[in-house]
Image 1 (tube, helix red, strand yellow):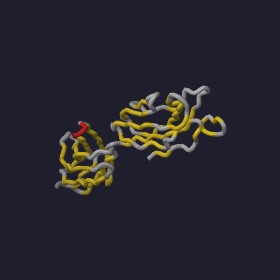
Image 2 (cartoon, one colour):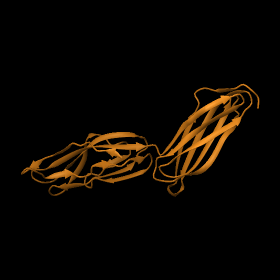
Image 3 (cartoon, one colour):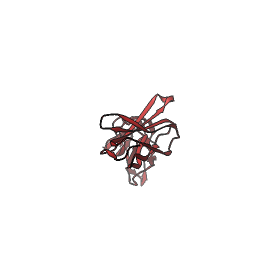
Image 4 (cartoon, helix red, strand yellow):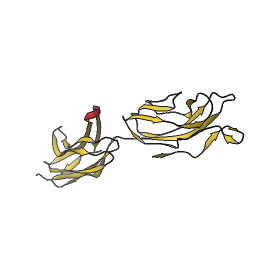
Amino acid sequence: MALLCASVQAQKAGGEYKLWITTDSLPSFAMQERMYVALMALGGEGTRHWKVTQGALPDGLALSEPEGTITGVVRQAGEYAFTVTVSDSGKPSHAASRDFKLRIVSALLLEWMKPPLARENRIDGSVRVSNGSKDDFDLTVIVVGVAGNGRATALGYERFSLKAGTTQEVAFGNTLPMGGYGVHADAVAEVASKNVIFRQSLQTASPLSITQGP
Protein backbone atom coordinates (compact mmCIF):
# COMPACT_ATOMS: atom_id res chain seq x y z
CA MET A 1 0.00 0.00 0.00
CA ALA A 2 1.36 3.39 -0.94
CA LEU A 3 2.21 5.58 2.05
CA LEU A 4 0.77 9.05 2.48
CA CYS A 5 3.14 11.96 2.85
CA ALA A 6 2.92 13.15 6.42
CA SER A 7 2.34 16.85 5.84
CA VAL A 8 -1.19 18.14 6.32
CA GLN A 9 -1.95 21.79 5.72
CA ALA A 10 -5.14 23.43 6.92
CA GLN A 11 -6.46 26.86 7.83
CA LYS A 12 -7.07 27.37 11.53
CA ALA A 13 -9.63 29.34 13.49
CA GLY A 14 -9.48 29.72 17.27
CA GLY A 15 -6.38 27.49 17.38
CA GLU A 16 -8.23 24.42 16.04
CA TYR A 17 -8.43 22.83 12.60
CA LYS A 18 -11.72 23.76 10.95
CA LEU A 19 -11.32 21.29 8.07
CA TRP A 20 -8.97 18.36 7.47
CA ILE A 21 -8.61 15.29 5.26
CA THR A 22 -8.80 12.03 7.22
CA THR A 23 -7.92 9.61 4.38
CA ASP A 24 -4.30 8.73 5.09
CA SER A 25 -3.35 6.43 2.19
CA LEU A 26 -4.51 5.00 -1.11
CA PRO A 27 -4.52 1.26 -1.90
CA SER A 28 -2.62 -0.17 -4.85
CA PHE A 29 -4.62 -1.06 -7.95
CA ALA A 30 -3.86 -3.19 -11.00
CA MET A 31 -3.92 -2.01 -14.59
CA GLN A 32 -7.38 -2.25 -16.16
CA GLU A 33 -8.93 -2.74 -12.72
CA ARG A 34 -11.88 -0.45 -12.03
CA MET A 35 -10.97 1.92 -9.23
CA TYR A 36 -13.28 3.54 -6.68
CA VAL A 37 -11.87 5.44 -3.71
CA ALA A 38 -13.86 7.82 -1.51
CA LEU A 39 -11.71 10.49 0.12
CA MET A 40 -12.88 11.50 3.57
CA ALA A 41 -12.73 14.78 5.48
CA LEU A 42 -13.99 16.19 8.77
CA GLY A 43 -15.01 19.68 9.81
CA GLY A 44 -15.72 22.62 7.61
CA GLU A 45 -18.94 24.45 6.92
CA GLY A 46 -21.50 23.94 4.19
CA THR A 47 -20.64 22.21 0.93
CA ARG A 48 -17.21 20.67 0.33
CA HIS A 49 -15.34 20.92 -2.96
CA TRP A 50 -12.45 18.63 -3.95
CA LYS A 51 -9.79 19.14 -6.59
CA VAL A 52 -6.27 18.11 -7.54
CA THR A 53 -4.08 21.16 -6.91
CA GLN A 54 -0.63 19.78 -7.69
CA GLY A 55 0.51 16.95 -9.95
CA ALA A 56 -2.12 14.96 -11.81
CA LEU A 57 -4.15 11.78 -11.65
CA PRO A 58 -3.08 9.11 -14.15
CA ASP A 59 -4.95 8.99 -17.45
CA GLY A 60 -8.27 7.21 -17.00
CA LEU A 61 -9.03 8.52 -13.50
CA ALA A 62 -11.14 11.47 -12.43
CA LEU A 63 -11.82 13.17 -9.09
CA SER A 64 -15.45 14.10 -8.47
CA GLU A 65 -15.52 17.65 -7.13
CA PRO A 66 -18.57 17.41 -4.86
CA GLU A 67 -18.17 13.82 -3.61
CA GLY A 68 -14.40 13.50 -3.35
CA THR A 69 -14.37 10.12 -5.12
CA ILE A 70 -11.61 8.94 -7.45
CA THR A 71 -12.97 6.62 -10.13
CA GLY A 72 -11.94 5.12 -13.45
CA VAL A 73 -9.58 2.59 -15.01
CA VAL A 74 -5.81 3.03 -15.44
CA ARG A 75 -4.06 1.29 -18.34
CA GLN A 76 -0.46 2.23 -17.52
CA ALA A 77 1.48 0.88 -14.53
CA GLY A 78 3.51 3.30 -12.41
CA GLU A 79 3.55 5.42 -9.28
CA TYR A 80 1.69 8.72 -9.41
CA ALA A 81 2.06 11.60 -6.94
CA PHE A 82 -0.48 14.39 -6.57
CA THR A 83 -1.98 16.78 -4.03
CA VAL A 84 -5.69 16.91 -3.24
CA THR A 85 -7.31 19.96 -1.66
CA VAL A 86 -10.75 20.12 -0.06
CA SER A 87 -12.42 23.45 0.66
CA ASP A 88 -15.76 24.41 2.13
CA SER A 89 -18.37 27.12 1.48
CA GLY A 90 -17.85 28.88 4.81
CA LYS A 91 -17.21 32.58 5.04
CA PRO A 92 -14.30 32.74 5.19
CA SER A 93 -13.67 29.49 3.37
CA HIS A 94 -11.46 26.84 4.97
CA ALA A 95 -9.22 24.43 3.09
CA ALA A 96 -7.00 21.44 3.72
CA SER A 97 -4.54 19.62 1.46
CA ARG A 98 -2.78 16.26 1.47
CA ASP A 99 -0.14 14.67 -0.72
CA PHE A 100 -0.93 11.18 -2.02
CA LYS A 101 0.93 8.50 -3.93
CA LEU A 102 -1.05 6.03 -6.03
CA ARG A 103 0.64 2.81 -7.18
CA ILE A 104 -0.68 1.05 -10.27
CA VAL A 105 0.79 -2.42 -10.77
CA SER A 106 0.74 -4.73 -13.77
CA ALA A 107 -2.17 -7.13 -13.49
CA LEU A 108 -0.10 -9.82 -15.26
CA LEU A 109 3.68 -9.92 -15.08
CA LEU A 110 5.84 -12.34 -17.10
CA GLU A 111 9.58 -12.61 -16.42
CA TRP A 112 12.44 -14.95 -17.17
CA MET A 113 13.09 -16.95 -13.99
CA LYS A 114 15.83 -19.06 -15.57
CA PRO A 115 16.68 -17.43 -18.89
CA PRO A 116 16.68 -19.86 -21.86
CA LEU A 117 19.94 -21.77 -22.12
CA ALA A 118 21.09 -23.92 -25.03
CA ARG A 119 23.12 -27.03 -24.19
CA GLU A 120 24.07 -29.42 -26.95
CA ASN A 121 20.69 -30.39 -28.42
CA ARG A 122 18.33 -28.80 -25.85
CA ILE A 123 16.96 -25.46 -24.78
CA ASP A 124 15.75 -25.21 -21.18
CA GLY A 125 14.62 -22.48 -18.81
CA SER A 126 11.65 -21.17 -16.86
CA VAL A 127 9.41 -18.13 -16.58
CA ARG A 128 7.71 -16.57 -13.60
CA VAL A 129 4.11 -15.36 -13.89
CA SER A 130 2.58 -13.04 -11.29
CA ASN A 131 -1.04 -12.06 -10.72
CA GLY A 132 -1.10 -8.51 -9.36
CA SER A 133 -4.87 -8.14 -9.63
CA LYS A 134 -7.68 -8.91 -7.19
CA ASP A 135 -9.14 -11.61 -9.50
CA ASP A 136 -8.14 -15.22 -10.13
CA PHE A 137 -6.75 -15.89 -13.62
CA ASP A 138 -7.39 -18.70 -16.06
CA LEU A 139 -3.81 -18.58 -17.29
CA THR A 140 -2.15 -20.10 -20.36
CA VAL A 141 1.63 -20.02 -20.84
CA ILE A 142 3.18 -21.01 -24.18
CA VAL A 143 6.92 -21.09 -24.93
CA VAL A 144 8.30 -21.84 -28.41
CA GLY A 145 11.67 -21.91 -30.14
CA VAL A 146 11.56 -20.20 -33.53
CA ALA A 147 14.14 -21.23 -36.14
CA GLY A 148 15.59 -18.90 -38.75
CA ASN A 149 13.11 -20.20 -41.36
CA GLY A 150 10.19 -19.26 -39.09
CA ARG A 151 9.35 -22.79 -37.98
CA ALA A 152 8.27 -22.92 -34.33
CA THR A 153 8.87 -25.85 -31.99
CA ALA A 154 7.02 -26.10 -28.68
CA LEU A 155 9.22 -25.84 -25.61
CA GLY A 156 6.48 -25.63 -23.02
CA TYR A 157 2.73 -25.30 -22.54
CA GLU A 158 0.70 -25.01 -19.33
CA ARG A 159 -2.80 -23.91 -18.47
CA PHE A 160 -3.80 -23.43 -14.84
CA SER A 161 -5.59 -21.17 -12.38
CA LEU A 162 -3.40 -18.46 -10.88
CA LYS A 163 -4.89 -17.02 -7.69
CA ALA A 164 -5.03 -13.29 -7.10
CA GLY A 165 -1.82 -11.93 -5.62
CA THR A 166 0.22 -15.10 -6.27
CA THR A 167 3.24 -16.08 -8.37
CA GLN A 168 4.18 -19.35 -10.08
CA GLU A 169 7.21 -20.64 -11.95
CA VAL A 170 6.67 -22.48 -15.23
CA ALA A 171 9.56 -24.60 -16.54
CA PHE A 172 10.10 -25.37 -20.22
CA GLY A 173 12.50 -27.39 -22.33
CA ASN A 174 12.83 -29.62 -25.39
CA THR A 175 15.31 -31.12 -27.82
CA LEU A 176 15.74 -29.35 -31.16
CA PRO A 177 17.49 -29.87 -34.52
CA MET A 178 20.76 -28.04 -35.07
CA GLY A 179 20.44 -24.33 -35.80
CA GLY A 180 19.70 -20.98 -34.21
CA TYR A 181 16.49 -20.39 -32.25
CA GLY A 182 14.80 -17.35 -30.81
CA VAL A 183 12.76 -18.21 -27.72
CA HIS A 184 9.31 -16.63 -27.40
CA ALA A 185 7.16 -16.85 -24.24
CA ASP A 186 3.53 -15.71 -24.13
CA ALA A 187 1.13 -15.56 -21.20
CA VAL A 188 -2.60 -15.00 -21.62
CA ALA A 189 -4.77 -14.48 -18.53
CA GLU A 190 -8.55 -14.43 -18.68
CA VAL A 191 -11.04 -13.18 -16.09
CA ALA A 192 -14.22 -14.63 -17.57
CA SER A 193 -16.58 -12.97 -15.07
CA LYS A 194 -15.39 -9.53 -16.21
CA ASN A 195 -14.73 -10.40 -19.87
CA VAL A 196 -11.13 -9.18 -19.46
CA ILE A 197 -7.97 -10.62 -21.01
CA PHE A 198 -4.38 -9.69 -20.11
CA ARG A 199 -1.36 -10.55 -22.29
CA GLN A 200 2.39 -10.46 -21.72
CA SER A 201 5.27 -11.60 -23.96
CA LEU A 202 9.01 -12.20 -23.73
CA GLN A 203 11.63 -12.81 -26.40
CA THR A 204 15.33 -13.55 -26.29
CA ALA A 205 17.55 -10.75 -27.59
CA SER A 206 19.50 -13.04 -29.92
CA PRO A 207 19.19 -16.64 -31.26
CA LEU A 208 20.46 -19.57 -29.18
CA SER A 209 22.61 -22.11 -31.01
CA ILE A 210 21.89 -25.85 -31.01
CA THR A 211 25.15 -27.53 -32.00
CA GLN A 212 24.10 -31.20 -31.93
CA GLY A 213 21.21 -33.04 -33.50
CA PRO A 214 18.50 -34.60 -31.27
